Length: 110
Image (tube, rainbow, N blue to C red; front, side):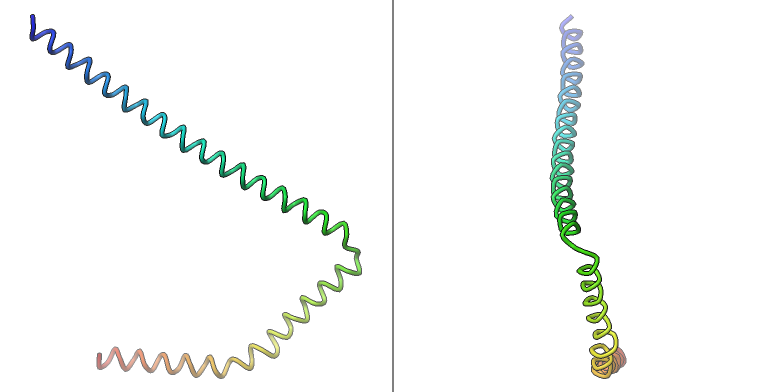
């Protein structure tokens, strides 16, 4: 009879342990989900603020201001592409050649 009681107690202990583990997993999932919801809400708030700022900025911009801004962006991009980058190409090319030759030398004799 005492063996039957021990077996019952062991089964009850195993069942209790499984239930506690399941409950711990549920609590962990709940915490993870709360954290994910908080992150999503924070992101939503940031995006809403950004949207309001963009809408306000666009309302204050006339077509002429937008065109001026686009022209400025175009000119700066044009400067980079046509003047600044071509000036840096020879230097970058020399650096690349030097790097390649140094890696070949270190691989051959290293």
